[in-house]
Length: 94
Image 1 (tube, rainbow, N blue to C red):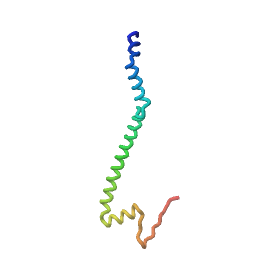
Image 2: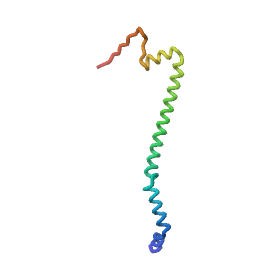
Image 3: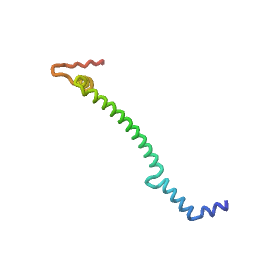
Image 4: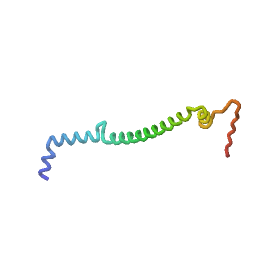
């Protein structure tokens, strides 16, 4: 214990300790900020993967509707288009 006390009174140890505490807890880029940014990065990577999957599906649909017959089917099914002389009835179960 007597050897430890002079070591703790050393000005370099005190300075290093204060600096270390400042870096870990008080600085703008403290440990909590770093962990929160890692969490945000993980969420953005997941969102990026989902967007890439959506892009693949959209490119496939675009390639599929390049033909006129598929374009009409796509417009009717997905966008609810109709021809001039057509009437559409929606039946619901209430």
